Length: 92
Image 1 (tube, rainbow, N blue to C red):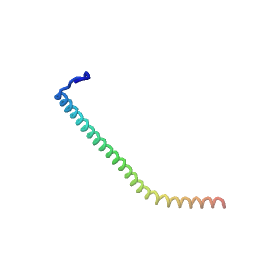
Image 2: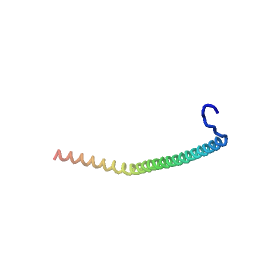
Image 3: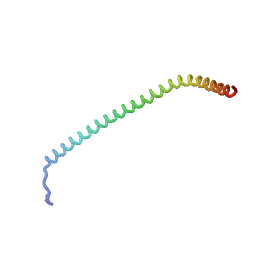
Image 4: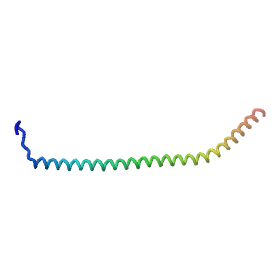
């Protein structure tokens, strides 16, 4: 070879190529494993958040129904009785 470059045999090139190919395959396999792990973790996190929201909404619905019925009736009685007291205090 001209230009002062080192001569490399075909066997060396082939061994370097196979080593590079093996390293590349290991990197790809590692990348696939990390991607699968992260996807699974992300999916589990979304499920946890979704379950929390669902439970909160269901709890809100059940407590709202119970609270709303009781508080409206009590609120009406309380407002009406306060109104009567104020009215009576003014005239007495």
